[in-house]
Image (cartoon, rainbow, N blue to C red; front, side, top):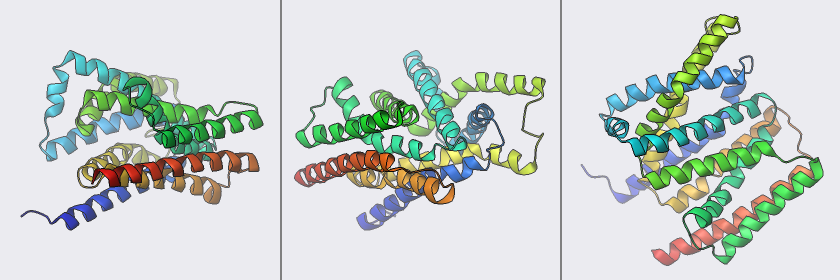
Length: 297
């Protein structure tokens, strides 16, 4: 039975809200694992993601990852994207558990504008005047923060650019999200297993050596990683990308609020000014997206 357009849009909206809400409340989850070194959290996230993704793809009867395994070009791309997403995960987990949630949220506010910049550089997309102004506001926000805190906000920039380049390569490769992520985590899994074995030998491993809660939370890193991505894939086929573009700001907003209200991170006037410049850029960018979308429909 075919769904009505309204029902399809509503389900897509719910999937998008579920996806970006889950990504937004990630700090609460990773903070529960603050006792575990960031490297171990990352390694367990990789390993348990492999198991969960295999089970998930088996349930939905998707075997496209087998095709990817037979293609050297695709494997080469997924090796690069695997390293990028692994690095992104590590820096994000490190930032959360070392009280840099506000700085991490800034990275994901900047990310849409980084995507615009990467599109111009690598895909030869033309930068429209509103988009150019939006990017300049983001650059001004980062420059202001760098100048006044005396260091480059490397957490924000690394998260924004690593995820932006990851998205660019995945877009060019035109691969399905879940099968691609399975191959990426499979590529990272030998290093993850080697590190966990080393930690076990050194007597620093936390899994099965701390508490049952920690064990369960580490195992849940698999579904916590895969399910939001699955929801995003469902949303992307049901609602316009312009709508997703708006909803994506839910994630860094929740992260920022959690950093400020739950973990009481500092938010000085310098940070406020920096965020304000980035928010103005995002507002300009969003208005230009709406205008472009209305012209197309």
